[in-house]
Image (tube, rainbow, N blue to C red):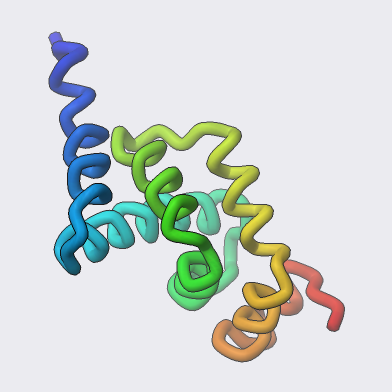
Length: 115
């Protein structure tokens, strides 16, 4: 039997690290956020090269958005609100330009970008 307080540990750890003003806190939070975005991209856009798309989303996200994404996905479950946030970040002009520049034609074709 899984104890509920044990399930909260990843969320507490991500939240605590996110509050740290150190590169460890930032790196750990970004790592968890990247994992969440990777999963979202894989499930929503099969066939798209995940790493460059994820990098573009993370680079375009604000610090608080990265914390929100990481905190929501720390337990392995991603809410609809986080999926919507990732989709919203993905439509920003800087993110779209990053897709075109860094992720290449496969992403343009799969996502249907029109520049």
